[in-house]
Image (cartoon, rainbow over all chains, first blue to last red):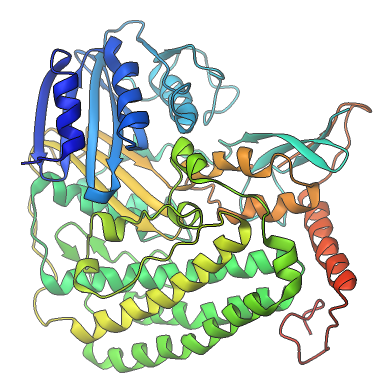
Amino acid sequence: MVKEKAVQKLKERFADKIINWKDRSAKRIYVDVRPDDIPEMVKFLFKDLKARFITASGVDTPRGIEILYHFSFDERGLVFSLRTTIAKPEPKIESITSIIKGAEWIEREIWELLGVKFKNHPNLKRLLMAEDWPEGVYPLRRE
Amino acid sequence: MTKIIPIGPYHPLQEEPEFFQLHVEGERVIDLDINIGYNHRGIEKLAESKSWDQVVFLVERICGICSTSHPMASVNAMEDLGNIEVPERALYIRSVICELERIHSHLLWLGLAGHFLGYNTVWMWAWKYREPVLDIFERVTGNRQSYAMMKVGGVRRDIEDEDIPWMMKTVQELIPAIDMFMGAFMDDPVLHARLKGVGVLTKKDIHDYGAAGPTARASGVPIDVRKDEPYAAYDRIDWDLITREDGDVFAKVVVRILEIQESIKIIKQCLRKMPKGEIDAKVKELPPGEGIGRAEAPRGEVYHYIRCDGANFPVRYKVRAPSYMNVPTNKTAVVGETISDATIILAAVDPCYCCTERIAVLDKRTDKRIMNGQDLVRLSQEKTEKIRQKMGVKLQKGSDLFGKDGS
């Protein structure tokens, strides 16, 4: 079991916002939250707990687009993944780029590959796909 | 008035397609646009149509330089998913392969950095000493690049006992060469003048951008997956984490050179301590669920996230290469510096675009003035020469390691 102070702090502070908490192993924690709670939790993890932002990953599921925000507590070798599911057909979520500069590219990537619109993103334009790729076609969608 | 100088996307001097736009006012860089995507191959999508065993080969094609880092992270992810125990001998072999790769990758970078600075002898010498490392790869794995050594539950080939003394001798012979590079860098007043205080990244910059690897460690951020979450045999070996506080290009050079020495230390210990036995846990299938695998590539942390529904292929395969986080730091590092320093600053994170996925200098007064990558390297080399003349440092032709013309 993970008894790390930082993680405990998070657990206590956001007790009413955490839908599911899973200690998969001593080095892996997955936590489910609602999309609206993401900016606040990300801010707490990044600014207060000084967790390192690794990346975000998106996956298309029958319930909606699932996004995982992966953080690392390097001194403990712990990966903390914050999971949220956004409803289709027009998935939208608040951008975290204003909190973490390093999230700009990955949000652009998820937008072009999975069609998730990041609200208030400073520069939501194509990153990887070709310029002539058709609008509204998302390669990682399963439909 | 702002000028914009474009560099790329395609130029014989660049290793890979890349496109930077340097916004300049006079000599000063005031902004930077980075355009990537010229190399996007859809590997994550492709992975969804491959079996778990094939995925390891697929991800090995992500990068041609640090080719084993992605398979390493990939098998770590699968082993995390399936809670798989890997035979001890395989763990040591994994570390040997990963460290040999770090040596050849850092030497490759050192050579390029030398070239950008007008030290073409460094370029030739660094690449010369890289060759014996590739010879080891050829003998042990059958390939000089893309070694296909990693597999879930172990490694694909054993290291033969009769090869070990030769491998030991080959890495041992690298030590004086690396010492020579270190001495040459530390003793050269021109390089101090050229690289110190240039392209500085602070600890806060590293945290904001999520930068990793030597880029982070040169700014005093002691992160390294090999120490933080040890995989392969790194927790069974005595080695040091290299950090420097300055955050400039000079610190990045020093960190990389010292890391080569550490890699040699690791390889020698692994070859000595490697136990006899099995090299493969013979994994048949993976359970449904999620897995996260990390590995410390020469450029920093490689991160793989996988999801399995119990079938023999991934539902989702997410890859995050270190350059994806390191390249955006250029925006902070290069702004405020001169055009002649831009090349070495942009090169200092050791960018890898086939992993992440491009330079331009723009002129807003007279529309556009185009300056290409070759012009920038020439500018950079000329600056070194000017500093050299100003300092009165003379080159001794033939005997000086850092002869300008490579003689």
